[in-house]
Amino acid sequence: MSFLIIFARRFVAGEELSEAIPSIKRLNDKGIMTTIDHLGENVTSEEIARAAADSYLEILDIIEREKLNSNVSLKLTQMGLDLGDDFCFSNVERIVEKAYKLNNFVRIDMEGSKYTQRTLDISYRLFEKYGNVGVVIQSMLLRSEDDIKELNKRGIRVRLCKGAYKEPEAIAFQKKEQVNENYIKLMKMLLTEGKYPAIATHDEKIINECKRFVKENKIDSSRFEFQMLYGIRRDLQVSLVKEGYRMRVYVPYGKEWFPYFYRRLRERKENVFFVLRNFFRG
Ligand SMILES: Cc1cc2nc3c(=O)[nH]c(=O)nc-3n(C[C@H](O)[C@H](O)[C@H](O)COP(=O)(O)OP(=O)(O)OC[C@H]3O[C@@H](n4cnc5c(N)ncnc54)[C@H](O)[C@@H]3O)c2cc1C
View 1 (cartoon, protein in one colour):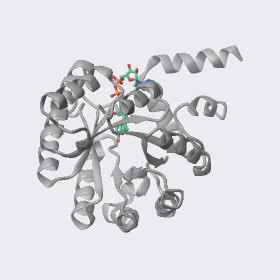
View 2: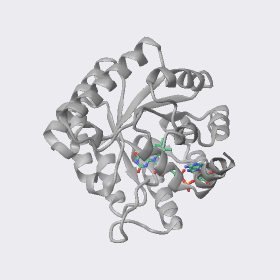
View 3: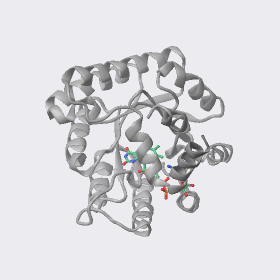
View 4: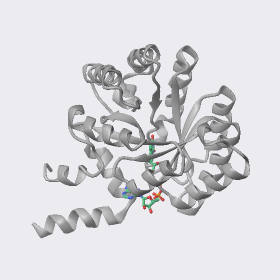
């Protein structure tokens, strides 16, 4: 599998944080903010979960020391959600508390639907105590409109994405057009009533609709940000900054890159062809 890292490097900034830092600095130099993700999910031991949290404490120190324009993103199953909610909470709390002291921010990524409610509940608890926590909502889920209403009411920052996990018909839109339509509806709810939302997509049609909507409703570009993934639509990342929009790139690094890489391949068949074509070329 090790040959795959060559292809994964398009989406992953390195296996070590030290490898990712130059990429982060290059993005910052272009006026692009970042959010750093130390890859990992579904850990099965408390020791590994604690070590994952420790790595985020180090990331926060490095952000401060290197003066990076960055916050952090993490997954609760990396922090031990499968081992119990209270264990996970106390593990993430160490990160949120440190980020709070450093005046930084922690985004809690959203994983598959079996974790949605528990992820929101833990995020609510952390938000009430510290305030510097935001969540992610997926437009593919039928429940998301209600979740956004609740999050807007509580004043919690939301990153809106389409959703990267395969979900059953009973709880999720299956057609791309439905997911996109719901995305636009939720995006408008966030832009008008939400707290500093993050519009996380590479979909130009949606981005253009966002630009049109904020202009029409006189929503200042300082009231929201666009977000994209490392290595995807770099041209658009730069052009949006040039147009005066705020842009943040999600920069993942770490040795546990395979599940993340797999999701990026699954999203776009051209990526799979790219890997296969290069593999068979030898
Ligand atoms: C900052 C950020 C954070 C995210 N966090 C989460 C999260 O916490 N939970 C979660 O479930 N999902 C998350 N996602 C992933 C998201 O749910 C989608 O799976 C992903 O962004 C692809 O959807 P899209 O909006 O770009 O639209 P799509 O319709 O999939 O793509 C639109 C266009 O973007 C480009 N593009 C999209 N994906 C790729 C790719 N893999 N390779 C090359 N080009 C591509 C292509 O030009 C494509 O035509 C996040 C996405 C972003 C940008």
